[in-house]
Image (cartoon, rainbow, N blue to C red; front, side, top):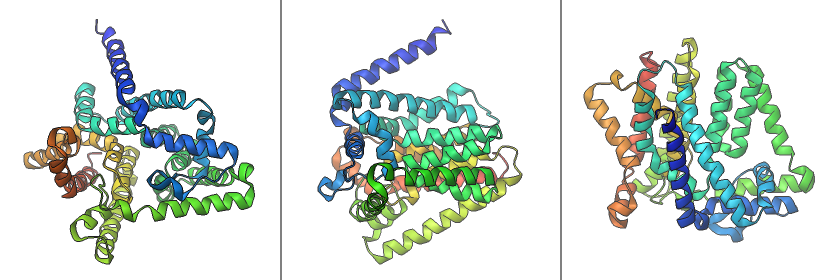
Length: 376
């Protein structure tokens, strides 16, 4: 019976996912539709970045469009179904990999995974429903950690470069490699990154590829400001924009706090150079700060904090009771606040208060404290 439970759980997950897909996701996977359209355009050598696309403009590197181009050749319904299934599989791999790589685990796997999923399920559901690729990027980061554990540093660097192709904000891991003096990984990262930047020239030509790269940069920078005051933003820039309004004051405050967060991350990484297994906490912290540092940090991108949340759950005894209560409350506010339950007005008021961002900053600080105490 015990051996059958995992199979029954997997079948239940598949059944629920299939029902959700049939009811909603097959019509709503809006972010995947952006990928699919970009893949069609890349296969035909057409411009990727068009103002006429409005909010749904492609904001990823041209190389990513080439990666999804084969999938985009399928009929739209088939492509959505396949991506939906792949996203569920990747999400499961992300959770499983985070647990498998967790160093010196202290608590039962069921407890760590169960509590983590309780607070992360909302973000994963949104990721899957939109057809996003954040979990895919995170899985490549975990693959890099696995390679590094096996002293395959070149493979580790290549995996991290692949993560940056999927989501450019994974560039945050390149300075981490440099600080750690992992020169083979840096070399592999650089080689893969250069190849990815140059590869679209095979389809667009050199001049066309440069034009597409300029279009990518314009699409990223031009779409930032309109999203800062949205209710679903958890970035530091969005927090100050909501509090003091968009403008120079908010920009300066966000820049100052972002710099402080970067310095904190650097200090944590440097403190861990003599630790026996520093990579997990380092990677967990860097993944966590991505939605905070990225101006367009949507709330569901907090799913990247899964390894950090697992670490905090596993090390709950490291904190005093008042801190544990604050930690659980911050996780609950972010992961258990539902629009359908609160209603549109109350949900918007909650999100616009940016209490979710404040809670995330608390969690980042607690991860840093684990390193300072030598607990991870």
